[in-house]
Image 1 (cartoon, one colour):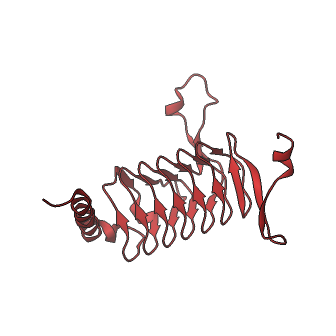
Image 2 (tube, rainbow, N blue to C red):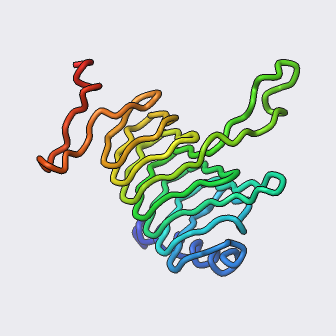
Length: 202
């Protein structure tokens, strides 16, 4: 009897090759050895760039939505791994760097639904660009994180269930809703140190 993990690996390999064979040419860029396993929805492929060795796990929803004359771009860098049930939306610019590790059920978006008109359902109101999103190289985004119109520096850690609505600088650890920086890397001492903001809560 074939062990289950060998069977699963073979199925995933077959899915990856089939997707690359039939759909890779519809993307703006589709690097070598890209793995997209059983996605849920992919829209706007001609505005989506995937670097070499990108891995996107099951049930992903990737959307690059063109509005009027504005061309969106959704770029995912080399070696980045994205977990299951990812939901990534770009109406202008979402850029994910190289070797970023993104856990399951992460939402990343450069936009919001407007809600000001109380005579209309929110779902019928316009989508508003908030701010460009960039996630720096080598960062780790925890499970259930939402990143909305904010950028994250390189080599950062965003704790599980955090909501990021403001920019996070390089070499930071941030947690909470809204996310706040609790540690920074000190290049002089070569250590991760607690921030003054976090010290006031201890």
